[in-house]
Length: 208
Image (cartoon, rainbow, N blue to C red):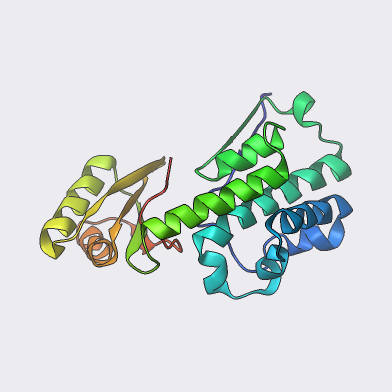
């Protein structure tokens, strides 16, 4: 059996994530401490018990998700005897998860990955101020329908909305100006899309 570890991207963050790992496993605690040290702040405190709006900020969410991903990996290694090089054929990740995968494989030091993700997040935040852009997931849409919806939202709002990601399995993400994405959600519902919802993600696009 071929095993792959796939690490999540932004949008999966939540206050309290990773706290059970931190409480249970020294190897996981060490990851959070390493990330805190690299950034020169207690990012772990924000992750475990901070303000949700602050965690949603890209500059915080990206290193935070990497920390939790690596904390989970360390728990598997220390408690279940997983050896990445022996037991896992591939590592990969969605957006920022690529950095988690690189750190998991040892291609990046965890401290360096944390610093890179903080810089990446700051650059993405600077490109589009919080609240200006938005992303929405369309569940039960194919790329052609999503493009049609985005085009109609752009035309009706006078602001940009376009297809950003094809996540597979009938899930398409559209992104753009907040007013256009809000309208796309309404248009999607009128077109029979099973579910259309805003993602907890400040910027309007996922960087490659």
